[in-house]
Image 1: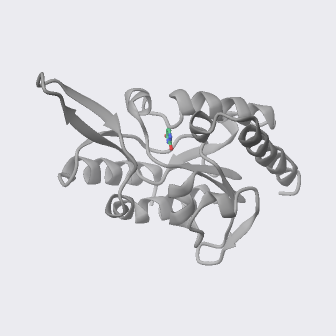
Image 2: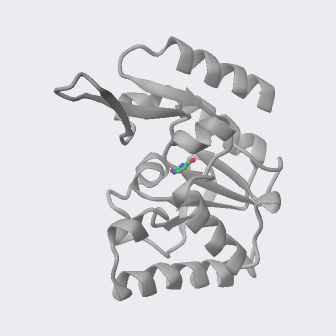
Length: 197
Ligand code: URA
């Protein structure tokens, strides 16, 4: 399969999906093949508007830390577990509709199983870095990022090393120094790991 085939499949899956509300779709971004592949959760509003993963608020945090370990967007591949933007709609008493992001549901993640597997094959990374619980559960047997962040694990089914990290938006939910130190320590562990690959 080529990147073009993947894009056509993502488009078809997304445009034919009627079970839940969604708000557009994107593909992965970055060079192919590539030694380093980051896998996020699902795109948000800004990502769908620009057609690129991790360009919104979480993306700004992500890029800051990425650069701090000597990596740049142009040298890494970034993709997602779910390629469309899962949304929920709320209708107010005044009949106004507001749209917000929601986490992808398991059947939605499963719609893209083959796509992510194929992307991993095409990218052929030496290391996959999962960002948050959604890609962690999709690519490892761990149930929660708290139990495995900052440790290298091997997925023998896909034959790839995986480095689980917290999602960058977790900094928004955990505004305390202890979590910041833990989060920044994972990035310095990644920096050391990159010297060995
Ligand atoms: N968060 C994600 O998990 N993925 C994106 O592409 C953007 C934000």
